[in-house]
Length: 554
Image 1 (cartoon, rainbow, N blue to C red):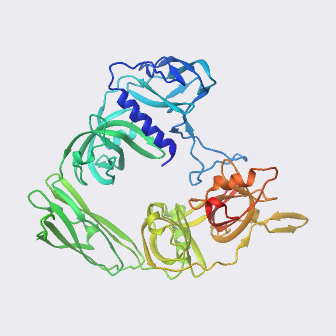
Image 2: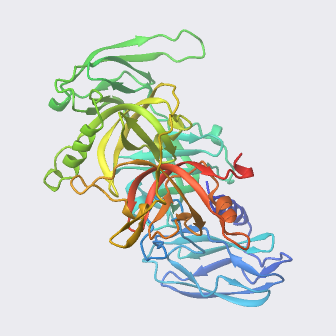
């Protein structure tokens, strides 16, 4: 979580508590004083001024992520896969300020907003004055909560208030009450980032929320990156689920087999709809009761399922079978994956098929691959098999492969390519098979120079995708250069192409940037890793080593 995100949450919490007072009063911090800390802008739009008297320089903290695209020095867009793309502003998009900072003394700030279209909205801002934080709330229109579906929340404006009811699909944190809500209006999950009672306190145990329960909360929408959230939503009520899944997700190889799904049934029995023709490879064998062996355990209902062997052992299939008890529904999810490929070149053929224009409406090809993890980043890992390599885009499984360089692994995913980099995406699972150790190959030197027809070039400038396949050959490299802000790309002497760190979590690039640029003369560092995709002006790589090793890195 970014520090700005923590400050935003703390700030909103302070303002919410302050809202319990009868009046919004003038602030009296020694460092800064405001004529008002609650700003109300008319629904039809307009502007409001706030007088500031500050003993120190002050500025608004930039808490709100924007949709602005960063560009490098060559005017190329820095895409979302780069680690330094987030741009922050002092206000949400609907609100503007005539100034975001000022020196000590008397100042007037003008807040402005256009017509809100009849939808009330609110923003909680933070002013930094010396070592103190001054909170200020800007509201436009009435903040009457709309009764909404999950889709309505996704389609609504940031700052709009909603009362929404949905099913608790999963629970992320029970200290603050972070969980996900779904309903039938959309396949998206709404993130409830904190659940509070009427006093604004986190009181998770009192809410008695479990997966499968129907829960109603009230809160204001915010968007954090690409995640739609209700932050510190107020709990309204919970309707306990009559059916709770205990064991409901199953993965089978091509041979098929049987599985036992387990449920806690609190109603009058469990039922399911007839399986469709597309689900003919699955059958329900039996439904039986299993009595609890201990007093603190629940009785279980066990559904035995049978999965047929794959006829074509190169295909992947999956389905969900919903089971019901009253109005409560829990699905059993079944995946059957194809046999592992003999070599990664089969996946490359699948990429050609999946990305061909004539196949855009056809089912995509999935592949199971077994190989060795040779490099890891936060977004996935480089998988090697018989000297061929592919990037496995599997950030959701990071905790499963973190620190597992050298281990053998089995993965299943869709053949895909991104920025000419071959990859497995939409990954179904990552299974560690055995421990191992990476044997370092001889790296290709991206600083190497050659002269053709009297013109000298640097090796990194010659990195290109194959003309026939359109794919880059993932390669182990080394390069020496200097880091520069704000993107932390490595610049090589004489080269027009930079080397960009992809998904780095292992090294403190801020520290290395300081190392390169502080002092009278610039210093260089040497990196090693695997380049795996290419964009205009830069080659993306997964770093495995940096020299020299800084003290903080030891």
